[in-house]
Image 1 (cartoon, helix red, strand yellow):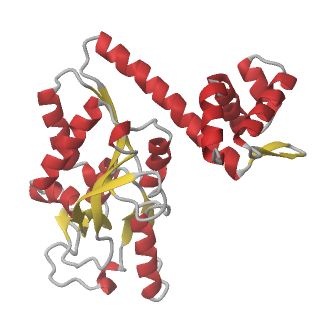
Image 2: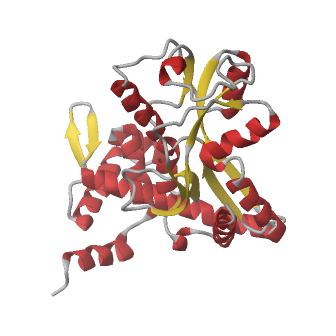
Image 3: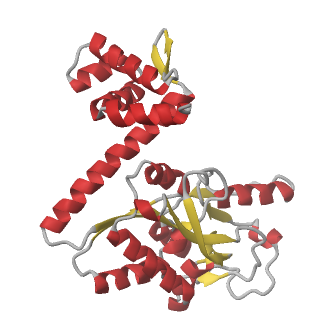
Length: 314
């Protein structure tokens, strides 16, 4: 007896068309079939029939009809996500062929978090360029919350930095390289620079530069503040921009938290100074996240290899 899974896979391989998936993604984007049909240049009845055919083939309801249009069911959301990934892979294949035709040694798109910025990723990229001088590289900076959806949809090949400690693990491969720790820093002229065994009470007298609320580190900071009697800093600046943070810290009597490796270069250069306070939160794994080695191009696999080599020397 043929299983339900095998039956659906057979239908998908023999009957599924990219045009149906394009419509599915468009309906999810617009929230109604009429606008999606206009995007594809087809009639609304034809679009409705295509959706119905998909629902019959996959044996699930993909959208719930409402007064305002349609809303994807959990099945619809899953198929839309896979549809986006298929289109991203097609686009990546076309781009890679174009790169090879133009003499490039492939292409890799890398999401980067602050923890990967100072040495890990630059060193790995330098090694990749030595091996593949014509490789096309694109770096996309952001938080895990910003980058992970792009990784899952295929827009990004891998994300290098602090590994997310929640969600995504069923669809994303995570490889830990090392643990990072967080340090407190300030401008070199800050009153607390050079003071030994600084207490939290002294720190609480100043404003803080903090990561956005959606980040893991910020959640840890907020929990720490709660344990300190619902402490609220006198000034909070939310920022993920390293250059802006550095400038703010140098020109104002405020404090900031950074991964130790990120802060080390500026502390050594005298641009920032480390405050003598052992940060009681924020330690976590740094590594790479990707959709599996089978999803990586030869250039992506080469970069992964050089990331591993660089991390082994950390």
